[in-house]
Length: 67
Image (cartoon, rainbow, N blue to C red; front, side, top):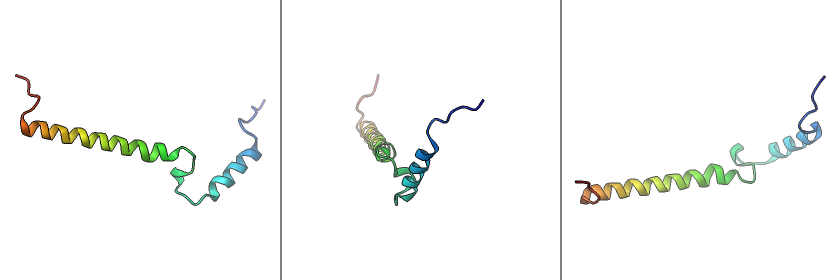
């Protein structure tokens, strides 16, 4: 016995034509791809740079030392 496919073949071909016709980068074709591939890494980079800068400032001024 063969299993039924998850989606009909016609629907897959329709999606394939749609995504191949878009003139964007491959990783930015979906509706939420800008959030996952641009916004989240930018937020992580900004927060890490802030924390590194704060740590350097604290070290240079001797703030937050434990005895």
